[in-house]
Length: 192
Image (cartoon, rainbow, N blue to C red; front, side, top):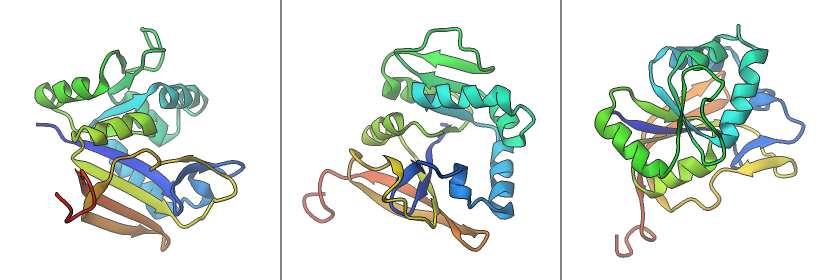
């Protein structure tokens, strides 16, 4: 059965981005970029919501020769949306309507490729709440963007216990943390 990984980049204070800051908060280094390139070579299906699709599909034609974008364009992608209409313009992209959790359960039963989310805070939250996520991976950038941060990642998420299964430091400052998540009904040790 294919696995599902929710994958986020995040500031230390939990934001997905910040006003006026460049991508990766301007802190991407050669080790981190090489790791991204390696990961883009591993075949998987990319899952995303409509907002992330709109953003990424707009970038794709602007930087078609970027190795990361070229790899992402070549990968199979599934977009969960009730607002987009087929056919979608970005190559190798399928539109899925209806319940995302049920669709992902079916993909796990019938598919062969591992799946990863990209961005898509609401989609990732619903998949975590439903307990269909096998891995939860964060790449933490050493910045606090309290005044300019946008898109707080964890607001509205269920309580989770996270068992660390992998960690790594890139470029002496960026932390990768990979966990197996367990959705909790309450604080640990209180009825769980």
